[in-house]
Length: 411
Image (tube, rainbow, N blue to C red):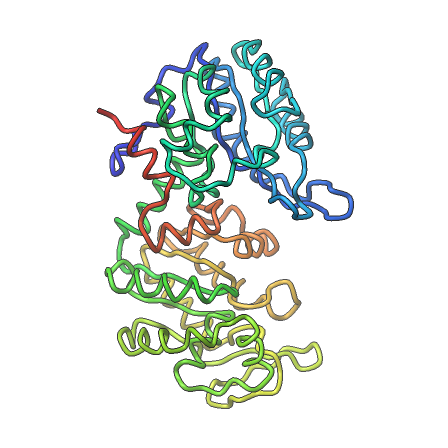
């Protein structure tokens, strides 16, 4: 049980010979031309943590997941996902049906330990419609499948900010509703960095999602969750602009194209309110004909693209990391894919990996950077969520968490 939320987990229910519906997040990068999966990390994570355990418990396992959005180039069948799962776990079946007669028959025919992957739930147009769990429970998807299910397991943390039918609609009508292992580990880690952080606690915010970062800064500093915010990437550029620096036309055009200039009044208020707690770069690295050159911020404006924070800034960040007990990182500090501009991200990862703090990284680009720079196994927790992670850090809850609390609580 996750005590802080009063949510049941796999350890709280009988699973042997029970038919369980597991809502996972198998959504994976796809080659737009070949339509082949480019990465199977999410599938492997669910397999290792949740599906293996269910098989060991001799459950009859039905897997429900989505891939892409209708109209997008990655909107494909889950056949490949099932084939990979079969190569990884063995004895996995796939059926190109979601809730029709063939799917229902296949569920009824499952033996203990069998795994059945249903077709991409977003092939059904009703999946993404808005509504409450109770309203969703009356849909054809839920009405057709729920009578066959003993336990509903919500394991799709990465989609937990979306109140879609397959994520919350089964909760009111299936007897046992529990968090899967992926969901459980995510929630325990997030409780540790948001509700109960050891101090000093720092949040490192980089990458290009400056609008999310402004919200996170406001919440975690207002509530005393974080002691310092360290900035990098476009987040740092925007905060520098808001603090009065002229970045140069080429860099300010980037912020303008992304619509970030509208955030400046809000960020100026944050800088006034939390002056010493928001740490901005002292130096930056620009790209001059493919070569890294470092400049101090007092040398701004500059006519070259800013692609990283500088060495002096990185050294200060590393010192703060060494003194911290809780560290959350969302977004790389520079364009890590380009040689010479991965330095700050590499240095911060190194400091985090040597730290005694509880370290959490999240967001697709941060995880990609950790993988690219060979740090993927050096952190206390890697969050599978992007939007879900951000929303939880800001709000302290998610639609799926609320449903788990309401229908999956321990009486």
